[in-house]
Image (cartoon, rainbow, N blue to C red; front, top):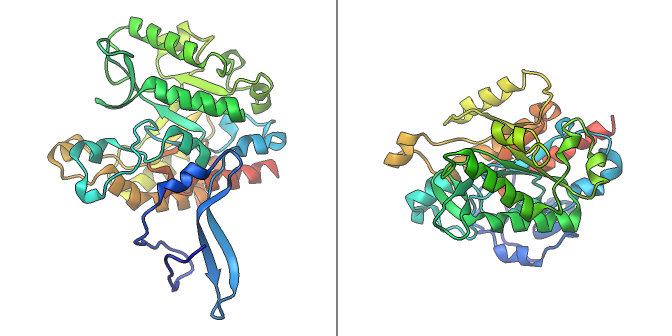
Length: 343
């Protein structure tokens, strides 16, 4: 190991921006057994003695590793970390100064689905779109912007589930392009069913089932679908919808007020997801006045992490964030889940 940056802290907590660019090549060397990877932080005293060590960490199988303890809980009783618009990713993003308007307001992640899952995300927010003239016709979008053929996303989810048996909530939401009638929904459900048939968790056991009930069936992808027609017609394929809680705000203060406010609502009988990110207004995006999603995530993610570590963790179910690696939301989830299992 070699030193690449050093700082002398003057406060007990805070945030430092470095000049170090993340080297994505370190992800080529990781697998399902990797914990620490790539980068390490050392706290040393005035004599140069190492007092503690912190590493950039993956959590590839955090659920399965704790199966004996987590198996008695329901999904809605645990803190599940996840990502917002999970499929809207580009790896190796250019510097902010070179951002195009489309990139600026549509990219929400800089890791593939596989790498999001390796980091510990277990809630994948999916926005399917339908283009009848394309082959294949289904894509993963952010609004009207297409990112990847849907099969690219499904392949990553399926492969991860088969290799780890981790429970993954795959949440189909919004359907921004092409879903003009129920016939298109029928086609998508069949497409999802065909692609994921060997990993789809049985929805008939319902949200009241425990994690062990899912694990014993050896099919661990919980497919949810935010459409009442589909939820009713295909109840043997999809689970009842996840309720996403949106603040749709543009400032850190307003996001905090919103998130703290919804946590006063009390427990829910369904799975609920806090969408813990700032959003650009339509006018701001069209005119380019609003900061881009990367800038907004960089400004808020450190605060989101602290809120869920300190105050919101005990009453949290699912949290979806932008640019996952810029947070420690997975660490917050593991911390509070451990407190639950130890009583």
